[in-house]
Length: 114
Length: 133
Image (cartoon, rainbow over all chains, first blue to last red; front, side, top):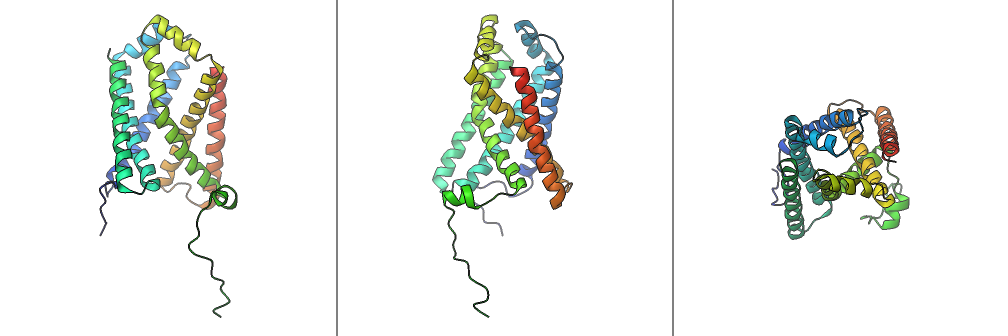
């Protein structure tokens, strides 16, 4: 019987799998972006803005950002679970991390669609 | 017979000197702890990276500001650390994915891929660092 703790993780496959799927999404995005940006063009403001204004790029970046957010949550929570033992402190830290990640995500959306 | 097996004193507390000098992590352990360190760095630095992305897309003059900002030495060095963190997290992550698939799980190949991860992430950092400078 698994002893369930309020500041524990999901006791199953979901987070483990999510960490790996988001990793693959981020890796694919990284390789594509590096390939596109290393294309040799000199990148000025116009090229840079137009690049991020493309529909596919906005959606791809949003998927990347969601993957980053989810991956960060699982990863940082795992670290907190290893090093922060008192329930109250860990819960506070987890809430703080969640708020920061939500802020990151909101900011990204605002940058992409302004 | 009872004396033949010397009892180690328990519990053994991990003092800072013990962590620093006594306990020697195997190579795969280094890859693992650096995965944590790089991940934590990236989590903390995302606010800074988003700030630069935000400014660079805001307007022509903001873009010029980011370009100038990125030419400052401390900024470049900080970015280089993050480039390393990204590359290491990327390479070590791919290694972990293969370990999940039970590829390279034996001791010899795990050590080999561990060395490859450390070397590849440093090489990639050098490559992107050269582009940055």
